[in-house]
Image (cartoon, rainbow, N blue to C red):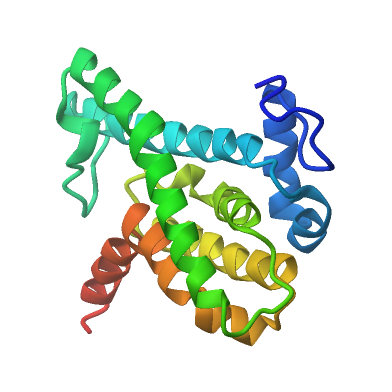
Length: 210
């Protein structure tokens, strides 16, 4: 975490303080963040950032289930599969697999898809590395996606998707409506399915009788 890329040009600092600062900056000044904080070939801090967000999200899911089992909390409208029902030892192994294998693989495959979608519309686009960084940092609001609230989950996943589309526009030099069109599928993969935004939206829709 202190030096993953030799002599990176620009990009983010390393370490816990830098992670916290990046989280605050992406939520407060996203356009400026994407313009100054995303650098070619410097995706390691972004991947660490994404892993940290997923870690908090999955640990909170586990905590919700354990508290619900003790009658201290309700899981609300969600069944909380994933690591919530595992024993502590199995949960740690599952979380390790999610952080080390599933999250990076999903991000890179989705970033490759995004690159293909950008080909016809962005002649001055950034590389796959920049797309990976945009995707990772856009996950910042999803720190709270593990809470047992459909409203909160819809809010943070929609927020994350919006950050991703904004970052795509800034980093790849396309207009925001174009970014919204070419980024819709990758955003759906990460935030709709990965962070379960679609599931929460379906719960809200059912609650309001639609």
